[in-house]
Amino acid sequence: MVTPVLPQFAVVAAGEMGSAVAKRLTRAGCTVYTNLDGRSEATRQRAKEAGMLDASLDDIVVKVNWVLSILPPRDAVSLAEKIRDAVANPGKQAQLVFADCNAVSPQTVKRIAGILAGTGIKFIDAGIIGGPPRDGYDPTFYASTAAEDRDVLDAFVALSKYGLKVSPLTGEGAGVGDASALKMSYAGISKGTTGLYTTMILAAYASSPATAEALLKELRLSQAGVLDRLVESVPRMIPKAYRWVGEMEEIGEFVSGKEGDAYRGLARIYERVEKSLDGDQADVEVLKKFVDDAKKTARHAPVEM
Image (tube, rainbow, N blue to C red):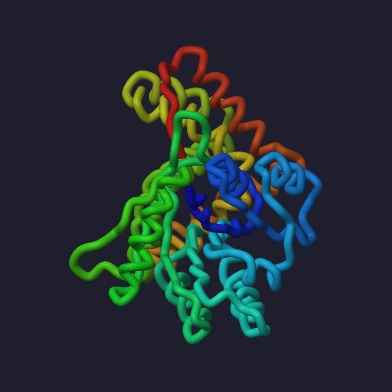
């Protein structure tokens, strides 16, 4: 009996999402590499727990079939450039597929595809909707490709046998940029509303603590569903705010024009939360207090982000 050859992956980086995706793949028997240059001890521990192997990018492009780029948006272009430079060296992997799975605009993902053009690397535009995979839960990798690379898209969909939930984006006009457009549209609603909640809690409190208290009471009376979602989404946002700054900037670029300024404004509010978390925590404490007070009477249900 011939043992099937399993695909080999690189998942960069070993953050919360990347390490959870890698763990799914290693549990299915796949080998998963990552690059830990300059990474923290916490990241190294996550990689170890997920069964990931540390390797240089020069080694990765020789060893793997698939590179899954799962990074903060600000780092997405840089990784593509590093992979391009690595495959320029002798011994490159002829069948390498690069899947950009980041929260970036269609404009940015097309730039990334352009960086890799002419290298022999096949390109997939992928947008992850949902949180890190865990027992009983899978986020969805929405994916699109250029029309001539439909076979590569089919191969990406086939990775479902190794634990990834992939939904191909096909149909009229679908191509590189459309999976990212879907991700931007979804995140613009889900994370955008969390940004609005955050903005108005802080603005109300800045007027006076009494204003914030009155806002809470009125939401409880007339917008119980909004309060439910606020109670769930705001606390989950706080430790992730630093990542959402770049994502809001990318959504602003996607929306474009003056309308995109709404999301550039939300980038600033997430930047403010990030600075508060790393600094005096005054804004963070305001948000936590509002949520704690709301929890006393709010009915709420879990929300996936």
